[in-house]
Image (cartoon, rainbow, N blue to C red; front, side, top):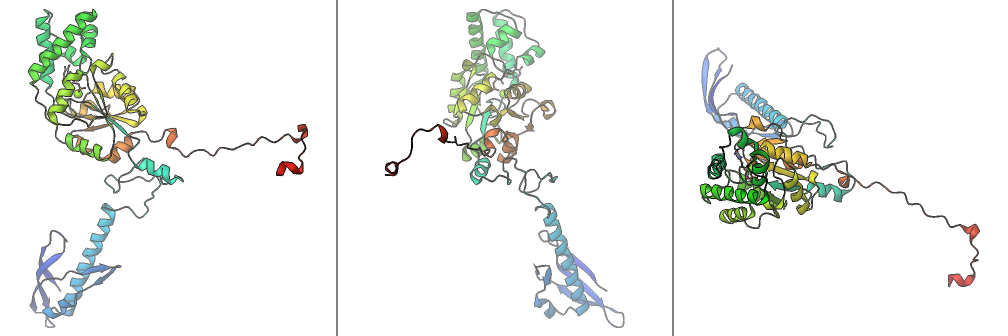
Amino acid sequence: MVESIGATSLLRQSPVFGLHYCKNVGGKRREVGFVRIPRNEFLGGKLVCCSSLRGVGVCRPVMRLLVKAQAMGLAKEAYSYQDEERLPRNFNYGSDSGVDRKPGLWPPENRADNAALHNPLLRQERMGCGWLGAIFEWEGVLIEENPDLEKQAWLILSQEEGKSPPPTFVTRRIEGMKNEQAISEVLCWSREPSQLRRMATRKEEIYQSLQGGIYRFRPGSQEFVDVMIHYKIPIALVSTRPRKTLENAIAAIGIEGVFSVIVTAEDVYRGKPDPEMYMYAAQLLQFLPERCIVFGNSNQTVEAAHDARMKCVAVASKHPVYELGAADLVVKRLDELSIVDLKNLADIDSPEFGEPELEMEFEEEADLSSSTSVATDDDFW
Ligand SMILES: Nc1c(NC[C@H](O)[C@H](O)[C@H](O)COP(=O)(O)O)[nH]c(=O)[nH]c1=O
Ligand SMILES: [Mg+2]
């Protein structure tokens, strides 16, 4: 009976106007005119249609069909809204509900919250961020890194020292190590402490002159650091660069005061993949290692973080995503992460976040039989 040629609103996905026809009693097709269907309201499952439709010359069967069509559209819309954007009807707020949540549901799963906790203060503490520490690497995570410079610095040093140029597999092997460690343990150029110190310092000089003192945030990193600051999550900076280099770089980029703790090459014996730098950072932050999340950009960092009992988010800057599979999360930019992602990574389930067990208090029974004293009326006054 009815044909409708309608434009579709991009917003409401319902026809906003159309050319409608109906057939009269003789079966002849009759144009009934353009109709702008007024916005209807979907109240409590009933469709409330504006009376203005009646005044535009739409015959009753057409109007019934229009209303029915729109009702179906609205019902479908309401269903898909509930299905895709909101919680399913059988949503269980218990964190141990075992309900398989669909990815993308809101709110995202948050392991830190535990509705089964009886202690509201404990629950509130878990929902805050006071138990979470962040440990950032500098190059390739917070700031842009040019991996070629590091290789060039080693090449120039080898020429200056009269050594053979380190092949690629060797420079890869020393990625993340302290310079002294790389020179003595991998390159095997010397074991003498003063020589190690001299060569390590010279290599950093070469690197700095190649690098030129220009620092730039990686896309999304500054925003992520701002989120951390907003949530008062303490941040440690851990890098195998010398302290002076890092301090200059931090000042150049204008983020002095952001880091609660800075661990540099001078502070430790061994760089990555040894966990020493991360464990020291957690100690200075006064956090359990399990509550710290490391943000790095190499498998050496992932290994070091895991050996320190920390979770590791890898930023695929100089290594592609598929090479960083050992990390707990891999992102291309830090601002892909939410605070809930971090809370779901860090270990909330260690003992001090459980509800305190009720302790039975045993009062020592007074041994009346052995008592020699006898209470008199005077004892009460
Ligand atoms: N040797 C190679 C490196 N080394 C670079 C260091 O591992 C590291 O990036 C630097 O010491 C800065 O420390 P951090 O990232 O802030 O902790 N890098 C390469 O890309 N390739 C190498 O062969
Ligand atoms: Mg790095």
